[in-house]
Length: 251
Image (cartoon, rainbow, N blue to C red; front, side):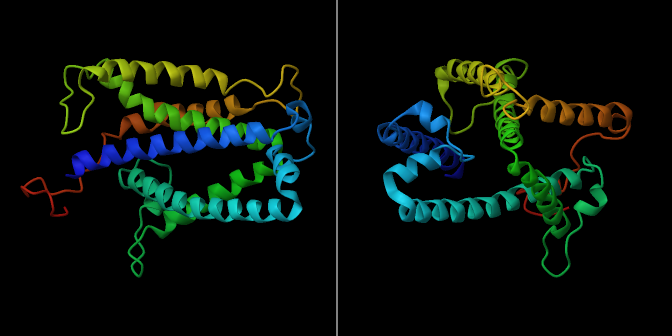
């Protein structure tokens, strides 16, 4: 039953990632001879020094390229995911330039313009990777955005949506509110922590500019809503024929 299999699959994948990540951290901790020396590495990612000390140049080269390939494949899947999100929002006319991003290519039957838009934004963000402070700030802002998007429905479920929520085939029962509260508290804590700079005496190179990125997006979205969208946006546009009982007919 998909309604039970999907959340169980999510839980298993998260648990598996936690266990593997924990084991990786244990291995790296044992392999790190000196934490202060590792942090003073001339490499952009100090973990590279740990790999060099343990695996040598050839081993590090193989491992690093393996991670590069995996990151590329992960990026491809993220482009697919993000382009579909852009298409979904554009279909509801919720993004600037929606009339371009929601167009479907007649040959491929896919939102090619949305894919190109996501790739262009990714390339612009990729420029920040040439700066340690820029890359770290972008990573912090990305994690904050993801965590907040995850915890928002949990928070609403616990507050205004408590009486309206109808449990599905898979739910946490009486533990739901406690686990949800822990999730909200943890995300609130992490949001604050991820906005701190990397050192106690930050300078221009070690400062965390994640707050600048988040505030820029917030100001843009708020201004767009106040001066434009609130006058015409009424919510998602239905694309399913409500008269079809099984909901399989496209409108």
